[in-house]
Image 1: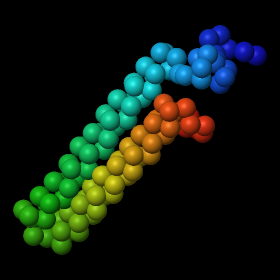
Image 2 (image 1 turned 90 degrees about the vertical axis):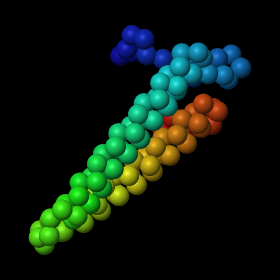
Image 3 (image 1 turned 180 degrees about the vertical axis):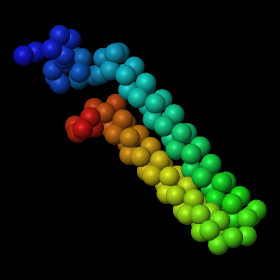
Image 4 (image 1 turned 120 degrees about the vertical axis):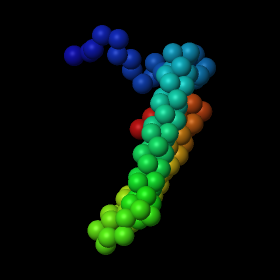
Length: 105
């Protein structure tokens, strides 16, 4: 059964193997969404770092210190994961835009 509006992979390129305008715009939208996602990861990571540092700075209990270190580690992990995800998606989008096979996996 064929869905209405579904396009075959061979329909993605124009007559000379170029992407159509629709595909170029879709890539641009995806690139912008990727940047917004990076900003969300960054915002979350920084918030976790700030809360962890604040706990350690303003409370002297062992629990506050342990929780602060845990939040700092989670914040650093969040920043790292967000950055790696952004770079991976950007590479895939660049490959897709250039028409390199396997860029849309």
